[in-house]
Amino acid sequence: MGKRHQRKMLRLMESGEPVRLAVTIGTMKEFTRLAFIAQQFGYAYENLLQTGQGAGVLWLVPDPDPQARTLARENRERYPHAAEGGPLPPLVPEALELLKARMVLDLERQYSAKTRMALVLVPLTLGSLTLGLEFGEDMASVLTVAGGFWAAMTALLSVLFAAGRRSVARYAARLRAAGFTPVTDHDGRSRYVPPSGRLPGHGDPFAG
Image (cartoon, rainbow, N blue to C red; front, side, top):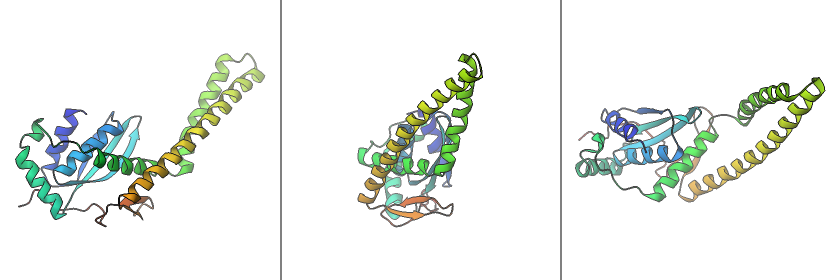
């Protein structure tokens, strides 16, 4: 995980305000670890949005829960140099898996199924035509090459989408088993509320 992102996030959290952290090239592993560290210092994961190839924006908000505030206070005492790249609380695999499940579902529901399909099929169609023009000698061969490539890639995408749906179902089942409850947010997306029964809220985790 990039130390730079972690230091930046912890410094931003010192304000006690909601944090928006943009990561230009980030993996799911990095995002989950960042969110886990934020939880150790009084913040709650709110959302993850994809902005480009490998890029994303992690949204974090102060957690007003008394247990979260107590944990944050204890960890600030134990790890006083965390924001300068010092030692951090140890990672907990179970907590990381739950964060990953929430993030995968948030990314899956960032766009509707029709929008995701359009985002894939438009460049695929253009790429197929380009390939056909590159290797075809006449209009018939251009269409044959382009159509064959398009059909093969569409079949592959169908398999990948089906695998993605199965993966989403597994993550949703994991969250429900952990006590998370599905709700609909103000954008009409299905989100999962933590066992506390509250969506991430505001409040200064550094107060007191």
